[in-house]
Structure formats: structure tokens, C-alpha cells
Length: 568
Ligand code: HEM
Image (cartoon, rainbow, N blue to C red; front, side, top):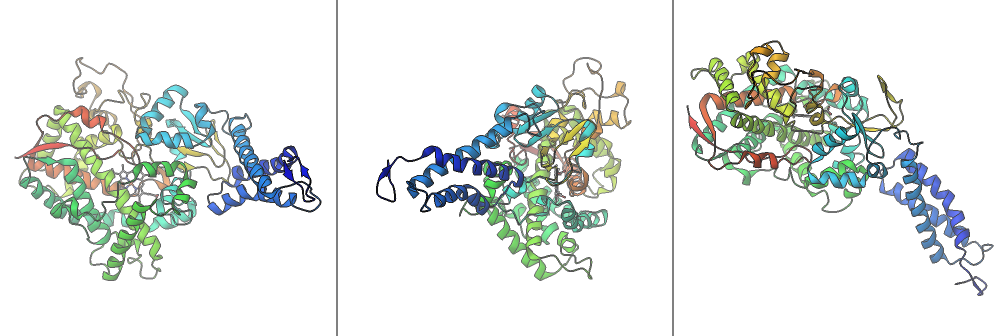
């Protein structure tokens, strides 16, 4: 019972209040669906506005019997419940544009569950199981599809970037190049990167790789009894990337992890993976002090490095020479924020991925002695002791090396989920073959699931570099070495190899711009290391532990690989 304005006690009119607020709630749930707002202010207006409006209306003199507090509390509860319920009904209904795609029921309801389950570090394996259960196209969220169909892959690479980076960069407005969703804007921001990663630029970076590679070999020689390959490869890539991007700034190979100015990288990865699935939550995170500490620290470190580099000007043609348009004197330099974000992107995109690949490659060599021997033979042929192991002039002739690298990237793509895409919300649907993807749909094209599909690769879970030689015509199937541990005289299944399904670097106009650089680093370090040392696993090391330690948040993560080295 509540007091009326005349003082008489009147029953609180639940039904009337509900009838006022529910239509407004249904409109709001449609606004959420259509506009998909990220801003907390918009959320506040949409969530508080209708109950406030009803409360105001009920306080007018001709509306008898309304207590403002009661009315607001009740309307707010009804409003929230109606928005949630009507959203859920819509998501489960046969009128939802993704209703025809199969997938677990709980994933259709909300992204909160999928985002939480991604924190287990097993997203690629979970998605693979979903494909095995539901087929090539799985609805993995209310508005999200995972697609594992090699016949549509090439066309889908040109779909623009998805909204995940809004969450990971904790901002709707400030995005690194990789997070820009507008295709024209993305291409504009990518142009300096394309110049900075082109063949002319790569030639300039060769001497930096050689200098840091030489230093890596010296450290290996000093520590040869006890070397953690993963750790030293990480030191190498950080020092190289700092030199290559900013013209210097780190000395991890000399001073170790203590001196790592980028040590915040790799922190809070579970939060990052949640924010990439729930971008609006990331935007909220941006307002909570401490929530984005690692990102802010990265930006402020990049800001210092960028400021020093820009002040110093270019002493060599490093990446900033291109990013800052120093190669185009008549073109304005970009705004400082763009440069700072590009600096972060170089470090985030170009370090872990390359170091993880190098570590995985040596893991496979150590667990597949026949492959090790074959690769060693090729390295010795092109790089005998008197040859400069850091000179990449023979790389293009080293077919086995490339086969080993490809196979490493196939079995363990360092970025197993690849880059997220989204069909433009205000654009036309994407139609490829019989597949019709409605506007606004978020799609994932996971390299891990494509690479592990037996329709594209024979024995997909088996590390077998020879498959690349057979596919390219360098070796005949009947002459090829069989996978390590095989007992028969030929592979027990039909040979299939679908190059289109090989996508560790993503693809299309927003595919990895650093692919050429990554391959140059990987080839150079592998040749130099095998030329100089015999690599053996450390006594007591358990290769199964290496597999168990694989946890994917953004990349597949760093895993210890302890070895001993002997000078050759
Ligand atoms: C083995 C090493 C590497 C792997 C496996 C890898 C993988 C990837 C993948 C999967 C993407 C998303 C592509 C897509 O959405 O289609 C990407 C984007 C990107 N990568 Fe790499 N990457 C590697 C090394 C590098 C290096 C060395 C750099 C140099 C800085 C780099 C810079 C970038 C940049 C800037 C993007 C964003 C491209 C754009 O949005 O236009 N990556 N990479």
C-alpha cells in the first residue's frame, strides 16, 4: 500500500505501471539489436530512460496513487527483465537471421558464456569439436559464426575486420590499424605498413637480423649447457623488433628479462580474450582505473619510444621511417596517436608470433629426429662453415626448410583463431556459393580448424613436412619419407593437400602485413643455429608437457623448451 497525493492509501498499480513500461522496453531491445551501442552513456539512457519516463508520467497530478521510488524501482525491474527476455526470445526465434545455422543452444543466448569459456585457453580445440559436431558452419554466439569451409575461405578474407579490438583496446574511438573496421580507413592506415614491410624495406632489415642473430649465437655459446630456447628466441625478437621499429631501445639479449620494457605484454591475457568477445565490456573497462593497466603501460612505453625516435629522426630506414612518412617528404606525418598505436602493434603483432614459431619449429625437430637430420643436411649443403649463416641469399632454394616452417605453422599456428571479421552492419549481406551471411554477423576463420581438417590435409594432426614437397612437385609421393614413427611402406590414406586452407597469416587485404619479415627472421635464425650448433633436449625433459602447456588466449602462448647445445 502507498499514500496517494490526497493522503488516502491506494493500492500500488503494478499492472498499470507494467503496461506503461513494457512497450518502451520492447522498443529499447530493438534499439540495442539494431544500433548495437558500445558507449556507457547510450546504455545508461536506454536502461534508465524508460523507467524514469514512466516515473515522471506517474508523478503528474492527474495520475493518482504513484510513489516515485516504488514506481521507478518497479519499472526499472520490469524494464530490465523485458529487455533481457525479448532479446533472448529474439535470439532463439526462427526470425533471427542466423537461426538456420546449427550450434549449441546456450551459445545462441548470449556472448557472456562463450567469453567466459574462452578463458580456459582451449578455444581452438573447443571450436574444432564444435565443427566436428555441427558441421562447417557453427553459430557460436547470438551473432557469431565460425566457418571452416575451404571453398568459401578465399572470398571471406575480404570481409572487413570485426569489433574485437574495440574491446581489447578499451576504446570505441582509438583503434590501432589492425582494429579499424572501416575498410577504406583501414587501407589508408595500412599503406605505410605495406611500404615498411615491402621487399625494399626488408632488405634494410637483414643487417639488423644478422646483428641480433649474431648476438643470440654468442649468448647460446656462453650458456650452451643450459639454454631455454623459448626464452632466448623471445629476447631475440624483442631486441630485433625494437631496433627495426624504433631504431633501438631494448637489450634483453645482453641484460635479460629484468630489462624488458615490454614486460607488461602477455599480462592480463584472460581479460583480453573476454574483452575481445564482449567489446562493450572492454569499453567499460576503459573507464575503470586499473582494468586496462597493461594496455596503458604498453601505450605509454610506445609513446616514450616513439617520441625519442621521432626526435632523433631516421638514422637508418627503420619501420618508423615509413610509418612516419619520412620516405614521402611531401606527405604530412600522421598524428602522434597513430604512431604510438602503430608502435604497440609492431611489438604485439611481431614478437610473440615469431618467437613461438621458432620455438615450435625446434620442438618438432627435437621430437622428429629424421626431420632434424634432413633439415641439417640441407643447412649444411647451403651453409657450410665458411658461409655466412646470416646471409639470406640461399633461403629461396631451401625447399626443405620452407616445408618445415610451413608444417610448423600448419600444426601449431601461433595465432590459432586468426583475425576476426564482421559483415558490415549497414551493408549488403555476404554471399559466397550457397552461403548467405547477414549484415552485422561476426565471423571467425580459425587457421587451427582449417589446418586440422582431414579434407584439406592428409593425417592433419601429424607433423609431416614432406607433404609440402609432394604438393609442390619437389618429391613424388612414392619417394617421400613417411611421417616419423610410420610402420608401413606408404601412407595409409589418400594424399590430400589444399593450399587454400593453409592460412597461419590470415589473408586478403587485411591479412598479416609482417609475413615476409617473420619468415626472414625464422629462416635466418634456424639456418644460423643449425649451422653452428647441435641441439639436444635436456635430460629429463618431457615432450608431453610441452603439448599440455599450450594455452591460447591471443597467441598460442610461450612454452618452455630446455635444450643443451654443442658447438659443431
Ligand atoms: C609467424 C609470425 C606471424 C604470424 C603467424 C602472424 C599472424 C597474423 C595473423 C593471423 C593476422 C591477422 C590476419 C587476418 O586477419 O587476416 C596478423 C595481422 C598482422 N600482423 Fe602478423 N603474424 C606474424 C608476424 C608478424 C610480424 C613479424 C609483424 C611485424 C610487425 C606482424 C604484423 C602484423 C600486423 C601489423 C597485422 C595487422 C594487419 C592489418 O590489420 O592490416 N605480424 N598476423
